[in-house]
Length: 195
Image (cartoon, rainbow, N blue to C red):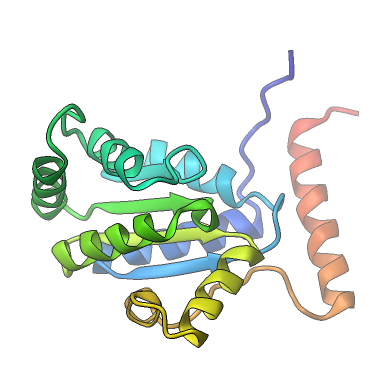
């Protein structure tokens, strides 16, 4: 039985919080793409529990279109056992009615292409009323870039709607990267280990 770790407001946590709050308050969208195991998901899950109308979806658990539609409906408080068209309409309605909602799509690189197009539909249906925050590892960026290069439907539009940019937290420079990781690990360890 693993001990419960204390949540630490690391640089990563603070950056993700800043971005999610921005998306929430201004009904904007962003994509955060970075290395795994730096605390992106931990921050997102914690924020979804502490911020009002902040909904967390783990795309690795609902990569397919139907599973995603039901998971999102359930997350925002819509009964997920209905006809798909009704679920989509009710979910969009709910997101338009709630004050400053934001949806976090974690592990976004796991979603299927058809699910990606559904995300675009939700974005269009809640434009100016809901924030969206997509989180993934480098594979997500590669997938989006490949889609754009191959002129695949939806990729350019989605990229532009999500700010036409990727938020990257880990520095590119090796020396800076080393001190970034050192500080990250130290912050977490200090808050969780007595010895």
